[in-house]
Image (cartoon, rainbow, N blue to C red; front, side, top):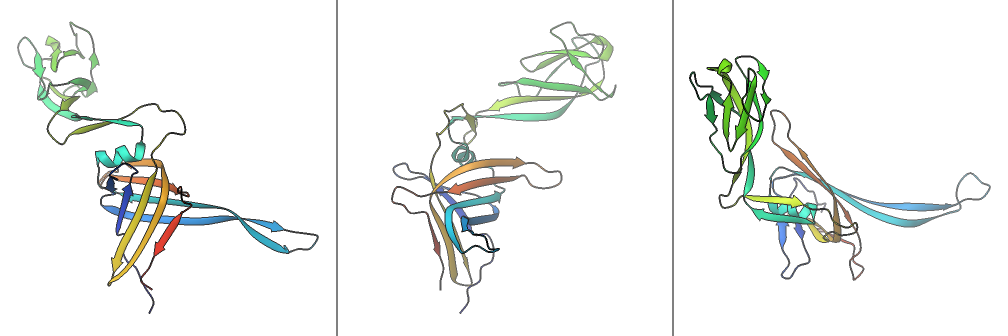
Length: 244
């Protein structure tokens, strides 16, 4: 009886540490795997070749997914450092310049603060940051405190900035410059069950070649991962599992 398959199933990366650490590619939207071979033709003076031999082979795959995971990003990028805490962007936090001196606004989050600009809603223009003593259309900022000119009193503004959050579970993945050739080798497993029948693929050794991050308007953020398979130390390349 023929076997069919439906849906994406689960995709897993398993590293070579002891014990091995497995990382699931969360909310898997789609995955594809291509196995291709080069061919060499023996051709004489006639139109068609007299023989064709299979030459080099290649296994390439790609997956798109939606779950943002620091552990997965760390696995994909390789050569990274993971630290506790995270930097968060606050986009267009609203405020009003006081009508009287000292014309300052303190943003809601000041830990690890870094300025990302101010938009003057009343004047319909972006403001210019200066070191001190701002004049019309200017501001100065330090440690999350924004100072404006008296001429801009009572103006509505939108302040953008970043700050740090050390709440448990927050993490920062930083990619450092590595020597070429370095990188983690993973086993990659893809499994799915449909109507009681199983289909699975295992790459015994794979390198992760590309990571993409897309944030479209009116849709969920989508990430994608490209990978290539090769032979492990025992010469194993790929296994494909079916019910039949």
